[in-house]
Image (cartoon, rainbow, N blue to C red; front, side, top):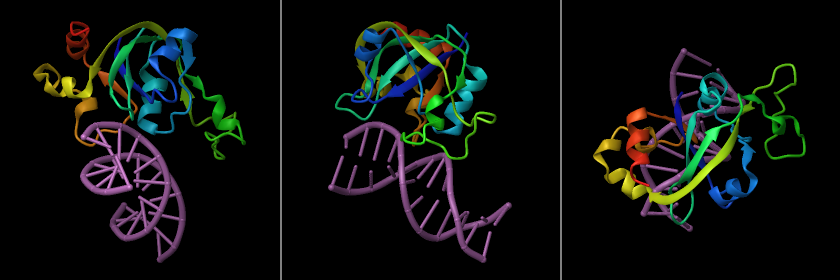
Length: 149
DNA sequence: GCCAACGTTGGC
DNA sequence: GCCAACGTTGGC
């Protein structure tokens, strides 16, 4: 059982969209580190902090959980889509995604509040220059955040 | 819109 | 393998 933080731009897909849909395929990740977390480490039932990025109020907006193991991301094969990868083949797919399911919406914990918490000083998402859209969360960090909702 | 930080690409 | 150029991310 691991814990993760997954970023999404709410203008693209928000916690409210996930509440409506119940679950969603996390397609479109085109970063190798983030891909490897999904493909190699995620297990069904892992906890997910759903983070809103690139918006007026960036921060943690809800809870989700990993609903499936990773499988090849279908969008890499769609030549007319923006996630098309000409180097990917069905025999040798390059990109993978898990599916994530809704747990609950929480109060929004703003980025500034995360930064202010000494308990979260080493959190990956807060590291300088961090841009990864999927990052592991330590159990201690997860437990601390659960108490902030 | 700005800019720092980072990842990827491609020439050599 | 190096590294400059470029594109992207994401907070402010």
